[in-house]
Length: 150
Image (tube, rainbow, N blue to C red; front, side):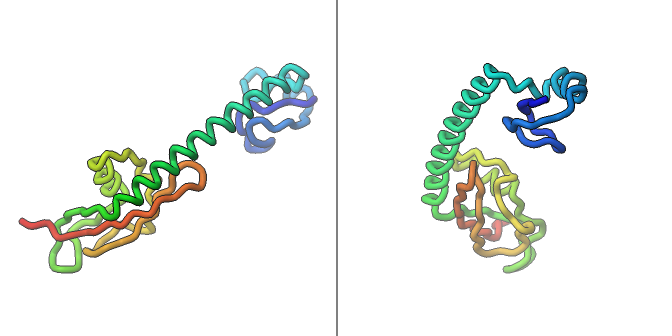
């Protein structure tokens, strides 16, 4: 039986894929659980409409991400104050969450998971940080870690 996957299913494929499975598997498991629907003529047309709508939505998200990336890159540099033992080492560390909070104060709501840090920053100085937005859109941000005055 040919079916259209409504959700990603690890062993069969991704959403929108048309696959052939055994009748019992489709009728007793996939269709009742909402994972798939029969590949009829009308369902194929519905699938095409869903694909068009999702493509337009993705284009819109990418356009918004490009605009946001330009705005973030135009910031130049953000300064984060942190407690330091001397002129090099920090007492704690600056994480993606800390950078996300600083960006939020500037008016940019960025998920901390989008901020690409190999490891938390543990020293004073400047770092160039990459922020991955929707699609393959990235923004580069210069972060300056300065000693907090007591």
